[in-house]
Length: 222
Image 1 (cartoon, rainbow, N blue to C red):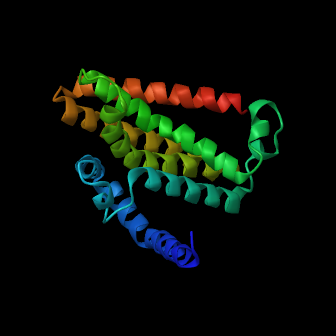
Image 2: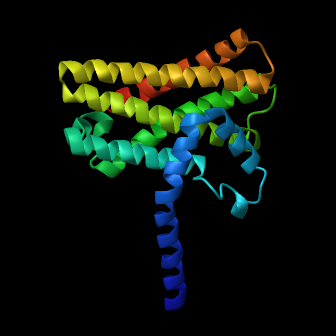
């Protein structure tokens, strides 16, 4: 790569990063007020050419990543480094800095999109492969980012260890799961054209599987 190509690459990188300051709030607001519409929007965008996708928002995985980074930054500012970073017990020894911890949290919260997307594909009677899983996984990343922020806020409040903050943290976590579950039921109802009860069953099963997988993963690093 010559000097001028390097400058051009840096220009593109700078523009991309700075554009996040505009498109992250836009994406967050739209996901908060119209989560199902954002999931449908993601499905539509998956049909476009790669360079024409998500031109007025952040892509779902990037939105999830940035949301987790913001929550992690708030945790460091309010309660300090997570105890896992200092721990050298078991697999926690591999988490030696904040970057490693963010990667672990990305994997953990990505379990929700992949489990829910897999449940939908199977319920539709389709073969689970890279093509069938991609669109529902991407759409799920939008609402998973909001769930990650609510659960993260709940954990931060609980770690503050005040009576009021523990109650508020528990309430934030419960609200996040209820909010997430409500829209998952609506999502399955919309895509499977089934009754609300059956949609609730699919959503509940996938959420329980996600929580169990996340708990098992977390226990390996405890």
